[in-house]
Image 1 (spheres, rainbow, N blue to C red):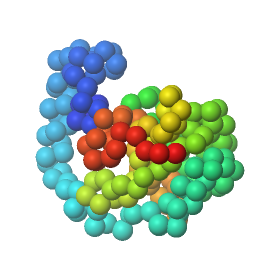
Image 2 (image 1 turned 180 degrees about the vertical axis):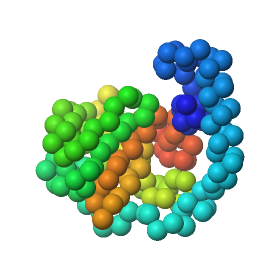
Image 3 (image 1 turned 45 degrees about the vertical axis):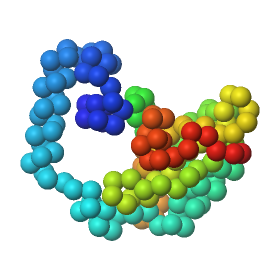
Length: 177
């Protein structure tokens, strides 16, 4: 609920309709979540100082495989427990076989994409994905990939599909192909 409200800037009414809740229940859940976060007192500078950042070589291989749309190379980068999610969509792809099938199905949409490196959460590396625009000239914002790793392999890719995030990061509305 916090992600939908704070990141995607959805109204309580939109969240309620999506989650089949009442607006009052959404507001109550938001209040409880914020109280929990306040009690935990997590700070982005504390989290970014943890040794959890992906290896630069792994990120480079991910970018190369994705931009070439080499599905075999892309899936090979994932840990055996590897998965992907795309907030706000209700989907969770788990395992190399399902990842391969997903990338095969979405090839038409993602082929020709390019990444711009960014940082999130106080310095954690992430990638802003631009995809071919409908007009045929230039690439337009699509999603922000946040990659979690385990044993120098990709454990989880969270691809935040919310183009207004690009302006929050000071990213351009379009880049050249």
